[in-house]
Image (cartoon, rainbow, N blue to C red; front, side, top):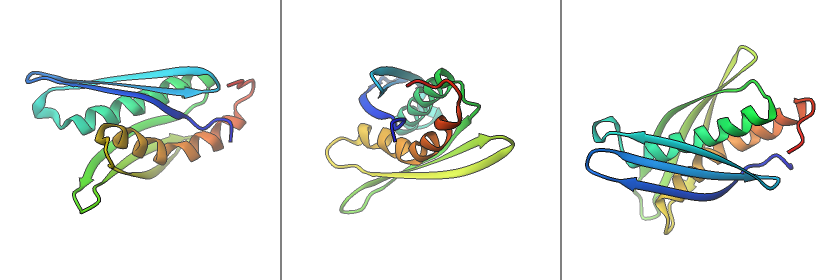
Length: 138
């Protein structure tokens, strides 16, 4: 269980011409940062934050030397009395593709909720994968 990534920080700058997101994850004292940006016609700030989170996970995966391909599928916010973020991610490993789903309650911080939903989808796969990597000392 030592390979679970923890969310440290989420920042998102929304401007008329471009949205920029930065997500910082932590594992065993090391930081892994992901960045993403999009234009207004390319999607919402939700997607930029989710992509930045996937990119931060990619940084971690690369650091431990694992062969895991990640692709963000989609991000949805269910506006209920208690809003929930749903995220789909495809993870490719050894010729197999896994479709993963993650969710998180929006609560008071919708930006963190998007990043948490991505981590909820991926952390179990990361934990399963990283013990197989020889010499992974994270």
